[in-house]
Image (cartoon, rainbow, N blue to C red; front, side, top):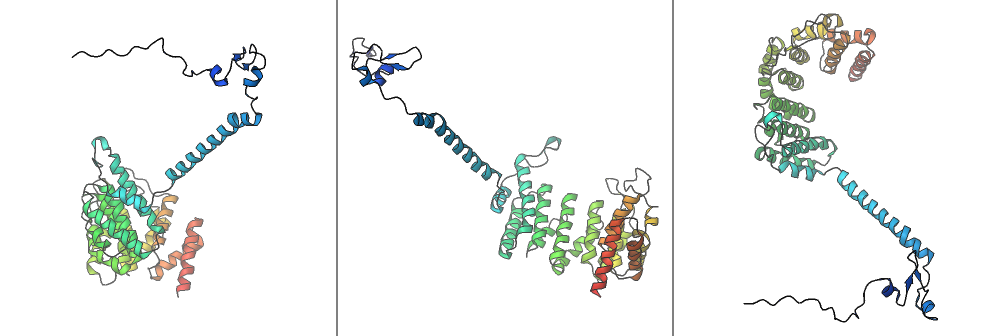
Length: 374
C-alpha cells in the first residue's frame, strides 16, 4: 500500500495572513529609525501622523519597567519567607510520632559504625519527644502519648536498636503514666549497657513524680547494683537513695555489697563512684559504716586529697582541689535525707570554712532549709 507523500508547502499560497513584525504591529507604512524607534519618515503625507501610536506614557513605562517587577520580586520574597517559616517551624508531637512509627531501614549497626539515616531520624524523633514532655500539662494528653510510646516500643523497636530504646524508656519515665513503668522494666535485662542505664534513669524520674509507684522497680534496681558495667551500677546506687526504705532488707544488703565492691568493669573502670553512691544511700537509712564514710571522707577535703583521681587505674594521681569539690558537691546534693548530727556538723564546717565559694553557698543553703523544716 503506497503512502501519500507529505504535502509540500505552496510558494504560491496567499500571503495575506498577518505576519509578525514592526510594520504589522504599528499598522501602516512604517519605517524604523537607526535606533529602532518607529518613524513616520517616508509615509504618505497625512498618513504617518494618523497611523503612529501616541507616545508612551512615562508613568506607564515606569510601572512596566520598575514597579511591576519590584512587586513580583517582593511577592516571591514573601513566598520564600512563608515557606521558610514553615520549614523552620518545629515539628508537632504528631509529626514526631509518625517518624517514630517508620522503619529503621538497615538500623544502627552498619559496617564501620555507620547508621541508616532512617534509624537516625527515629532516634531524633524519640529524643525530641522526650524533650517536649516537659511542656505537656494536660493529663489526658500525657496518658495518650504514654500509651502510644508503649505500643511503638513493644511492636516497632528491635532489641538491638539500643539508642532508640534508651530515648523511649527515658520518655516513658518522664511521663510517669500507668502502664509505663512495666514497659520500662521489661528492658532492664537488655544486652546493651546504655539501655540498662536508660532504664535506671527512667525509674529515677518516676521516683520524683510518684515514689510509691516507682518502688515497684526496687527488685530490678537491686539486681543492677551488681551490673558488670560501672555506670549502670552507679546509676542504680543513686536511684536506691530515694527508693529504699528501712525495711527493704534485700536492697540494703545489696547496697552494702556495692559499698564494699572492688575490682573493675570490662572497660577497666574502678567501682569507686558506685561505692560513694551506695554509702550515701545507706547513710540516709542510718547505716553506721556509711555515715562514717560520708562524714569523714566524702565531706572531708583532707581525706579526698589522699584518694585516687583516676578510676581507670592508668595513673596514680591524687584528687586536686577541683576534683575534691565535685565529690563534695555531689555528696551535698544527696544530703537532705541524712539525719546523723556528725554529717550535719561537717556540713556546717563546709559552710564556714571551705575555700570554694560554691561549696560554702550550697552548704549554707542546706543548713537554712534544715532549720526551716524543723
